[in-house]
Image (tube, rainbow, N blue to C red; front, top):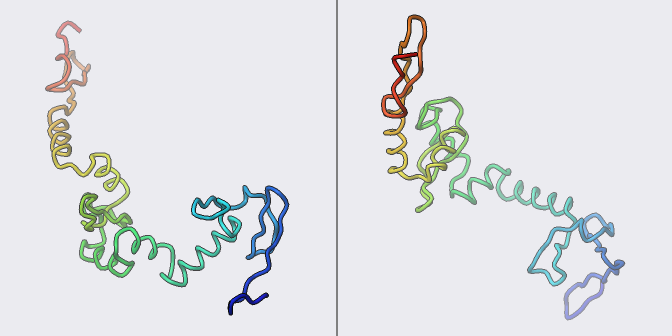
Length: 173
């Protein structure tokens, strides 16, 4: 390597038009094999996609001990240890429905504060209702008022009807 102003400088590798050289694997590949990077002068990442992914995985392992720890720290500011402690406080079950082995950390989208650990369905349900207590209350009211019941309309013949929705079953049937 050359020395320029006290620093080591790598020699420039020339690649054919539409190609780029990956310094990690030493191969020259098509530009489509490199991730896009708007901040780079060329518009592409330095390493090819497989090398880029391997370097990212190695960094997550080295700095955080794994992908799960990295995800929890980056998104919620807690680690696997805190996750396990919160799960133990909840008795190892979903904070809403009580199902075993919940894996989703629930948080308030306005403040970012962690609320609890939920199962996939409960976490998705809160998300669908946009964390709105008013929407959830209206859903509860709707469910209570529209519970379908079996009504006997003729000996041995039942019709499903709702106390607040639709018409009552006809007596002529």
